[in-house]
View (spheres, rainbow, N blue to C red):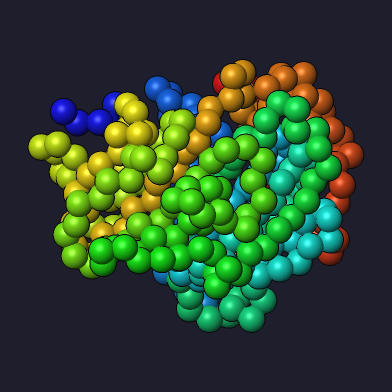
Length: 293
């Protein structure tokens, strides 16, 4: 019997001047463990006059994880961080009670042809940490745990699994795992997983039961401890999940909280522009029409 309870198709979404494929949240599944938002950026071929420019915008109550396959993004935030993220590295920004950041094509790439491809992920904070001070961590690609078993390559991008721990400083029990294989293989990793679990197919395909699943799909498992599938040759998948929170977390725009009053306060603060500023930036993204979901 298949262990798949829900299949989520990638849906187009617009983040300013850049189109992405949105995977979470979904009307039938608002979160997987603490993961509340996943965008697949690209792959996009940008010409010498096209650039990624996401002006300063705020966050509360979450950590963002940016993981690139191709290209480069210059991250600037209200803590004074100015850092370029490149493929394989992790930008982990914890908003806590409030942070503002921008994401742009680095200056040295703005007048040349380029690629941009990656994942942007939001992880909700536990209720007791939603109002913590914001912070930012960058982890280089070489510092991410990586290993090979039976011809299959693994990376533990964040969290704990397989008796290993990523240096990304997460705040609740979770995992975010990359699995790559050049050959068709059977994968059985359920004993290393816990909580809720999802699988995103970036390239290639997998087979679960009698069904074959292709790229741009997220599969949500019935039981993470039964996670077993066949990965096809030249495939890359991502496993994400962890322990769900006991309370519901609400999302409005870039704000995540278990307390709707904190979201209302953040909306007011952003409208009145009392959030901290990003040094060197004068633009900002206006608050959209209010709607808590």
